[in-house]
Length: 154
Image (cartoon, rainbow, N blue to C red; front, side, top):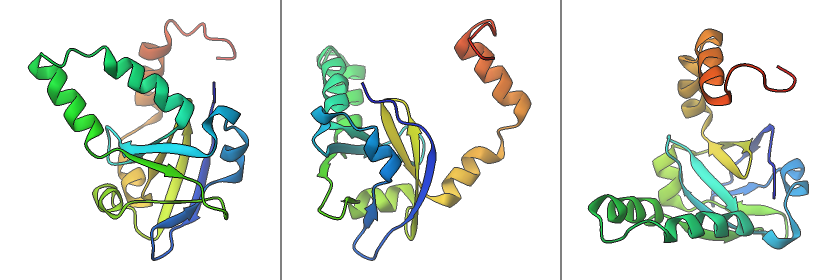
């Protein structure tokens, strides 16, 4: 299982190609084989899943009830913009124009390791997302998500 972490900024060329960060590449498992699935994120960013991690997402989606309205809406809107990608010989990925437009990525892309996936942000949208995040808010979120504060190292 991959565990991506860190933040990396790279230029996007006029064809939508961007270098895949070397440190993130080192975290790829051999099963990924430099293949990815790129989708819209739940915030104005893109989620990049290595092939092996995307298989886990698809397995979870297969259990969603397609006969329920909510299940159909979820699958439709989660998968409709999914794109399969692979690294080229220069270790770049090509971002599809419709996903670049949606996420407002143009000249610069910021890659953020997020555990099993990688988030790709425009600098402006990331700054907006971070603008309202105070240390106090972050601490509250951390406590709610991680438990009673007894997490190792905290």
